[in-house]
Length: 165
Picture 1 (tube, helix red, strand yellow):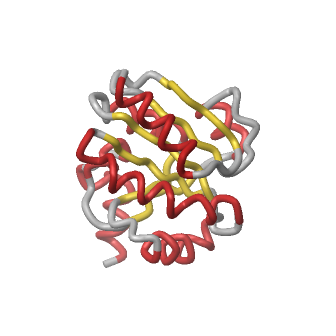
Picture 2 (spheres, one colour; picture 1 turned 90 degrees about the vertical axis):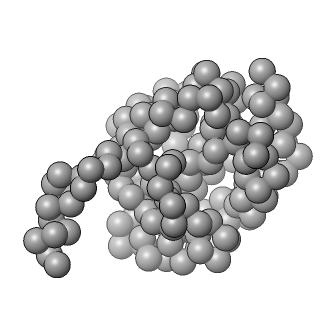
Picture 3 (tube, helix red, strand yellow; picture 1 turned 180 degrees about the vertical axis):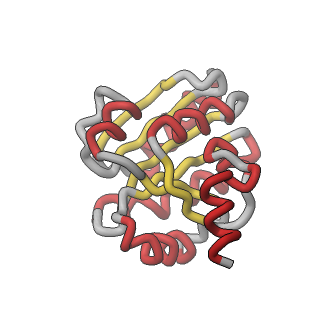
């Protein structure tokens, strides 16, 4: 088992991290900012909401159900969501339990690498504050970015603007 796991980690088992949005079933995969940006590019043709969150971030936990609900509302219109957990490696199981409780049934990311490199690569305008959210239109162009908790109506307006572009 260990040899198979090690081989999969080293070789990727045929899937790169940018394949994430197509995976079925809940899983958490470590990813660099470059891999997250690659997943956004791969989702071209869809509106993509990226949300960086953590289980220890109360505002993240509070806004999370609204994001999941909006995915259910707008996925048939082309919305995809990429969740990126900023939880520490030893908190992966807690993050997975939280995602499961929230009804997330698809693959997600967990930030890997140095914090500042991740932050600056994902978006130079991002201070690193959580939660952080980006929306990309169907041409993979960033249309919205904000830090901090927002309510469902705020998310919905930004999603609808991107869907209507």
